[in-house]
Image (cartoon, rainbow, N blue to C red):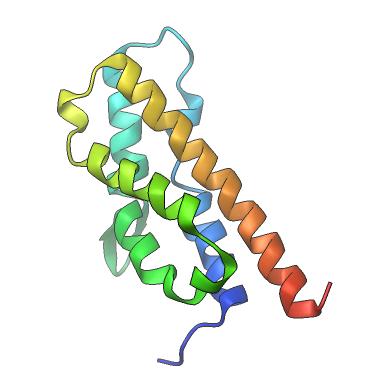
Length: 127
């Protein structure tokens, strides 16, 4: 397979990861049972992309896409993804505060990926 360009990787990151990393958790209303938030985060972080090729979690998606994006400055996203990967592995032991914080970080990653994609497009077009 050809190497992905930064703009292609940014577009995939925005869609495949950014759209789905906080997809289920955003529908959980304040005061909902903790179990509901935990299950939403399980879907968002561990079953981020589902398709004919199987199920891929957020950390694996990011690992596969980040290479071409390094030159765009992704340190903050890397740090947040590290936190999310660690928490994804321990969802069953996280208390409500940690689960809410995890959902917040996932939303921040989604926002950061939208910004990254816009920056990659601007750099590609010289704007």
